[in-house]
Image 1 (cartoon, helix red, strand yellow):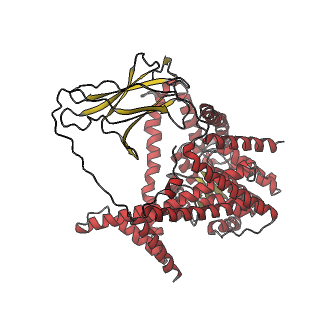
Image 2 (cartoon, rainbow over the protein chains, first blue to last red):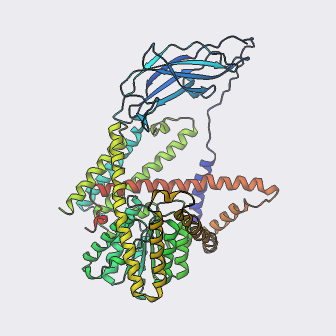
Image 3 (cartoon, rainbow over the protein chains, first blue to last red):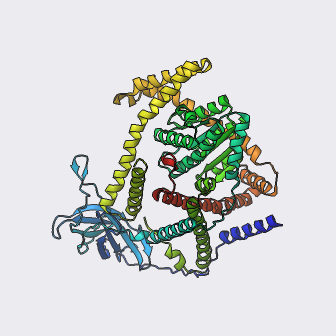
Length: 424
Length: 206
């Protein structure tokens, strides 16, 4: 019954997403140009030409906008493009920057507007000066000429000018910035609560609870444990999350006196993994058991790495395999080999594309964020549990805004969606 | 000091790079490029450690385990061969010994391992698609419908195509986006824990 209700809810949500209703009426206007013979008559230049500093850039960009020439839609000898010219003096020599094809305009609230971003921050290309380089603070002048299909050109538009300048805050990321501040505040609040000793409930995760049992199984069988940190670099957050789980696993293996094998595919990952395991053994009071050779560098290449790790599984008959970190196409090759050896397997990755493979081939899978939560779950340290709680509340906020956004957009109101508008 | 200094460096670099993300100026771009260059520099030095680890473990294996000796010697011979033939810039030109070995030995071997994936997908699917529970049955039926799209079914094909498109674009995409959102929040929380020095296991213990 409980399951049926769940399925019913899922179906309702899916249907809501499948058929968003737009109550806004779509009015279409048809325009027709006057049938006047204009053959041989030069077209008019574009109108309302404007130049301005490109917002949110590093100070080497200018945006030029213009509205179409009144002759763009004429029946005979129509406009095919607009040539943009630039100069650093108003009455100086203008050089052509680019020709923009007619019709390549964007439609905004003010109607049809052509937009071109003149931007280049490379002062030189090789050893030669770059003619497209725009110097910060220098004024540049632009004018535009219309061209027809038969090659007739219009007069130049009146020159417009702008000077590029760098910005100290990216206004397109304001909503993003505010969201991060709110999230940071949530995290700090719950860390403070945890410090005060407030009990923070966290939901149980099967995969994490199975870690201790998996280590116990290896101890009973007297076989080693394999820990794979994936094929990411040391700077990947998933790999860092992998280290934190490795530290807890290594401490347990030191206490139970069973070896943990950590073949790695990146030298920096190897150094950090060796240091993590060494510290875990010292913490468990068994530094004598630490063997650096159990954490070897194998190869940086993906499939040779798979061959090496699969070889270790087959030769050493590992009792438990952990896959924690960033994985790519090697996920199933590793997990399926582990399944054939009869090892108990626990995987965790933040790569949605690899999750189905791990779910199919391993006993327990930490899905996405659970990988990051594992460290806090295993240690039960209040300071680590604080951010976990903040994460749950942030998710609740996101769900709230997704529902509100879906409803308001379906009713034709875009104010909620506009709050979250960003530009990169 | 051994623990405090890295934590201070992590805190300062972390906060600086967060702020950098919201500043588009040239100075900010320089800081970002500088940080990336540092990562590359550290990586280059760490390669030496990696090579040393590989040689040490392989030599040790060859010395102690007679059964592994042949493979260990092959590994060392392959490594030496690629280093000796590939150390010059001209080695990367087509037709050189290095590129010939790379293209006609290493790449086919890699392709062979990758091709195993086809068999592994079949065996993993067989286990995953067993109707053990109500949810596993839903998974089995969905997989069956999605796989049917690849087969011409005459008049049913059009309806099935629509259904598969809906499955992929609505429930599947919704679940995928939920995972991505969770991952994003998890990444930020983990980064915060690292920057604030709460999570320090990666430094080698508490």
